[in-house]
Image (cartoon, rainbow, N blue to C red; front, side, top):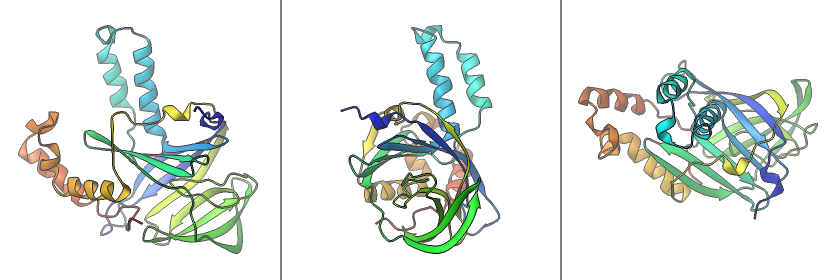
Length: 258
């Protein structure tokens, strides 16, 4: 059944900062994230990823046949755009009381489901202002990390970036106490999109635990991950370079899979 809440009515823009390598805390990655929010549903994803999808979808609609596409112009446009650094897409459904997580790893798309409800929030008597909204402090231990959040009851949405939710207002800012991962609201606008379309195609469905085991195994052995894939002809030197990059991705947001 198509829920009315699967059409967004607001878009909340977040600046994301993360530390991929725990041994190099000065090396920060960034992304520009968006939370599409409806009445009963929300989607959190990289805005750069959404832009790439939009360009490709618009190009496809302009032609009835792939042969008619101006691939040179399309590829040039895509290559000039910023790419998403955080490749997950988080779907929250209040009707189903669950979170569906989509993520691309190398050439495959994966999906897993976890419960929506987050327990263990500790609301504190501290306040500050973000974008003109009065915000209150809250803390939680999640997936092996301690997080500090600032939420505003002036935006009565029990939602926030990533999987975070369950407070009596929108989470405007959240970061772990080591400052490895941070999301901060930087803008709001009215927006209407079909959130049910913000999924990844041809997904491999796993449990959450299976997904993270698979992800870790692929990151540990890039050559094996690429075996039989289109890039299997990539040089040994290139594979070593990619492997070194993934070896430095040792600091995931979720340290422990609940």
